[in-house]
Length: 103
Length: 353
Length: 168
Image (cartoon, rainbow over all chains, first blue to last red):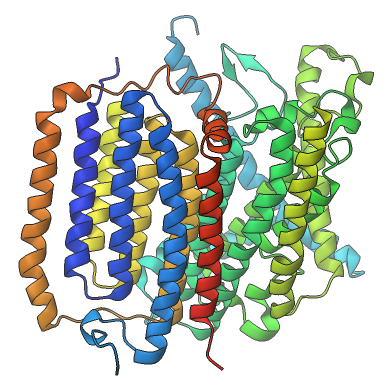
């Protein structure tokens, strides 16, 4: 009754999400949005891990996703703190204006 | 129903369950408001609503009609789509989590469980996840109103809910360790053996976890004594200052639906859910098949009602916390206590086995 | 069932990702990223990873994205403006992303036969949940990485506090 979905479809969905993340990373000029597109790329990679874990009937892929989530949480905490610190000194979030090491 | 395939039976019964539970939850929300006004009135030595219908029982209908007929104001400076979406997010998240709550005994009709919309093996995590999504409703409402009071209220609410979610989640770990499952049905069954003595709060030794949970739950639902986000003496009305008519009613209903959900989870995890406190003192088939199906529901409703009354009692008794007191209470007291509870519980379980 | 779930939530995920790319205001981008993450959670669930689905909702959409929204609200970040840098980025960004997508989908499609099909039944009606299997592996074979990540989290918390604190 239920039609089956090939694993390749999940992988291509992940590829779409990943390349959208790359495009957003390159095009966006707002520091927070750029950071969010990194999260989008991480999510796309997680989807491929889960799809491969389903394909091989092994849990290693799922556990790897678990670790990726933990590291992403740590990364988001430090990254947002850095963004707040930058905003405090430069009062802007545009990446074109925060390209100098010293003001 | 013999000519229906198993899938069709499942579908029909599920739709029936969802419809009945939704209607009942909305009624319960409406009458919790009335209960609060009546009970709070008695605490403050006055009558509470008593004009509409006998004992004021029609008051929720009157309130509903009033809120529905009021003009729906939309501030010019507000971010329109988010301003409209925020109360919808808040109410939806508050109502969805009732779907995984088992509110009766195991009764199956044609292989479909009757007193539980969905018995998921990650039920507890689903409730935690939906609660954490509910934060968006409040955060967005404050930001999209473009009002300083709203923004301050929603910043307070968001940081308060994120902080107390940690203590809330950690306080549940002891219960999960006891039951060895995240399914709410399994957690209830693990406490059903000897009546009240096998409940997690008594026999399970989770009384500390229960107090952490109930305090974190007050903060999580933004209720007194942690109702800083809507502290009327400082912030007008907090994040729903700019809301009127049905949108305000949605936030109001979301608050009470959250109260009901939190009470349901407390009675499921610490007070044995639908199991009777008498255990096997009453025979299992006491009073025939229909009565023995109804009794667990009555126990469950009684426990939830007791928690709701506790909520209102606390609101009528305790003054509001200061904001820094709230934060240091959550981070410096509840969180370490919850971690200590996990360590002690796992040591006890390890030594026993 | 599997096909319907994939089509609905895969479509939602792609729509959310494109909306992230096209919206100018960071808060709209953040909310569309939340949509992507929620629909990915449903896809994880349909692939038999219910624990990951729950932790995706709790960790990603419930904690990380709330922090993003919180910071956007706190800094009152407005719409981004177009600059000369953004025009150069358009020239490089779209062809680069399209090239990556074409390369990846070419590889996946050429290996389509070897990759096989998903099956929803028998994997989700499991009596034992995969939570217990995951925790068994996590606390026996992978105990050291688990502890190292917990130290990483601790370091990240301290670093965030030090960075975000006002200087005296």
